[in-house]
Length: 374
Image (cartoon, rainbow, N blue to C red; front, side, top):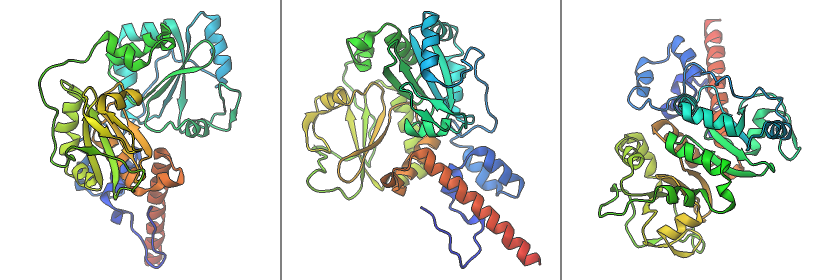
């Protein structure tokens, strides 16, 4: 966390550059008007695929206008002979949410299939409307409901079946073909017989051919003795599950992992790369002897690359198992290195704290400037 000295007058432009890079673009846009250094603004230009949006985007008109009583929403969906309910967690300036709305739901086949089988209820993770959960629990606001469900790396979609049970949760953005498969997995009730991972593999089995994964100099080499249950590790642990012939893996290695800021942050982690389909021996962070393939299966991983983060004692802190580019990845790394997760603070809670610190430093600077004029 950041603490400002009470004996000096902090100036917002003296905050660390990385902190400024984490703040919402609309907030920074105001700062630019007040003299935000142009060269810092240009820092967003090189890796801008997932920089927060300056303007909010619109939902499709078929998204449900709900009073946010989820059991009532499900009952109304069933009355119209739907197969269940989708709960969408998003935020106005989230680039991943916009891609989901415009690229996935912008496809006629996906939009029509979704509307035929589900009602979709949107939740603004910063919103103030009260929410009654599927179990009847009342939350004072959408924000409180979102925090309860750990809805931080948006978009997040929770799929509920006819009985009101959550049968699938997608965290982050997935390309259209995987998203369509998720819809079919739930609508066809395949979850009753197999995991989503197995469903995907049955429809599109992994390729098997000679080849190598993308390597990086900072990856630890085998044997992969990752056990931290007996002796704590010195650093946090990042385990990258990948596979061959994986375009998303290639993008991760050619873009985010080549960024100097990301590479510098990763020096504070032990980083291991595993092929999720290989029989490579692994001693897991909790001390279990297994293989990369069996471990990925036990973790129910279905997307590559998946990034799993573990603390010094071998407990999983969080995972990123969806599309990730520079801005989201550096936010996650900074969040983990801050250590606030020890206190139960979510990514969104931490970002809110940074925003408050930023506003506070601006206010203190204005007060100082006024005092100097007086």
